[in-house]
Amino acid sequence: MQEKLSEIKKATLPAIEAAKTLAELDAIRVGVIGKSGSLTGLMKELGGLSIEEKKTFGAAVNTVKNEITAAIEAKKEALEEAELNAKLQSESVDVTLPCRPQHIGRIHPITQAIEEALTILVQMGFDLAEGPDIEDDWHNFEALNTPKEHPARQMQATFFFDNKNLLRTQTSAVQIRTMENQKPPIKIVCPGRTYRRDYDATHTPMFHQIECLVVDEKANLANLKTVLEEFFKLFFETDDVKTRFRPSYFPFTEPSYEMDLGGVMARNIGKEWLEMGGCGIVDPRVLKSCNIDPEKYQGFAFGFGLDRLAMMKYGIKDLRPMFEADMKWIKHYGFLPLDVPTVTSGLSLNGGKKCD
Ligand code: DAH
Image (tube, rainbow, N blue to C red; front, side, top):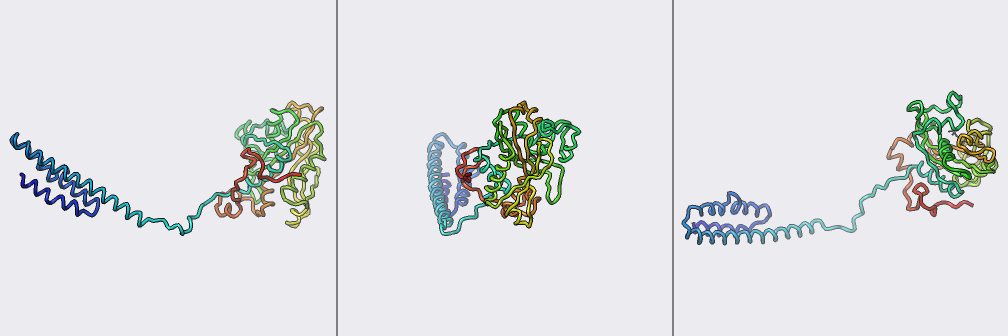
């Protein structure tokens, strides 16, 4: 037995020394001190020896086992270090290589247009107002002087959920929500999604509007025209802007107008006038449905399509790709995010344009 022990020791220690990889080393460990290893086998034989023999031989086996374990540990450390060094050598960083391209998302032109429009209007003193996309009949129609059976309802092909709930067809619904909760003076701007059952080259079932409402003791048509003209000048960054009001009809304004934009933006596409949206003096019945005294207060309002505004400003020809989530399109027309505070994030307007 003693012989066997020395043989194991003699064969194992140099083998450990010669091992070149961690796997090789582990194979040696298993072969010697693993469950069916040679030294483990020898230890099992101890059972058949006398007490005296057990003492001396047992101690000898343990010493060899400790020696082998220590040798394996030491070799393991050395191999691991060598492996790490080799790895560091082969994976050294070449700092002169160009960096990997960073994919930065783009701001959608609609979001950009909303930001630009709000920057202007908030600086003119309008407060940002919001309402839900899923509206009820009262806010979207009834309180806007458009009761059931009113022919004007047909102007807006509505998505109804049931008799009461619908997808808002116009941001004008936010006028009602604001006036119900706030007393004059009121001066709000509301951008947002609106929905109608329409789909062709110039209509999508979801589109965006921007709406303004002013209610105080003196708000009048001249104010309305000035606000609109100033807004267009700042938004399109030109003084070559004209506005024209054409008599029209909306249930919630009296008188009502269709507003047209003239000047360079119209000439750019070979036209004298471009139809932008609706406006007018708030109908006293609308004020009444929000418990605002029409004898004391009056107001003006306007609303227009934001998508059209974005298309005009950024030279986008077709409306439909705006909402198709096409990466190529968004890469082309989208804006790089700038590190300036935005109106919609509710921060200050330091990065915005100045209104005179
Ligand atoms: N809500 C109207 C529409 O979607 C547009 C509009 C007309 C808004 C007149 C107004 C307004 O605020 O006064 O067709």
